[in-house]
Length: 65
Image (cartoon, rainbow, N blue to C red):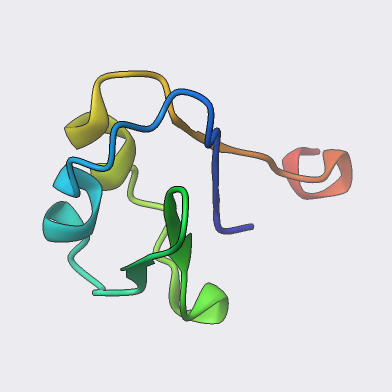
C-alpha cells in the first residue's frame, strides 16, 4: 500500500517529495499525494524525511502474515 498523509499535520515543506527515490509523489491541495501508487517501493524515505509524523504506511493484515 502507498503512504498515507495526515493533512492536519502537514506544513507543505515538500521534503517527502524530494526524498522519494521513485518520484511518485506530487503536491496536492492540502498535502502531498501519491501520483503513482503502484510504483511505490515502500522504502520509507518520505516518512523519514518528514519527521512530523504526517506519513504512515497501512498494510492489510493478510500481507503481514
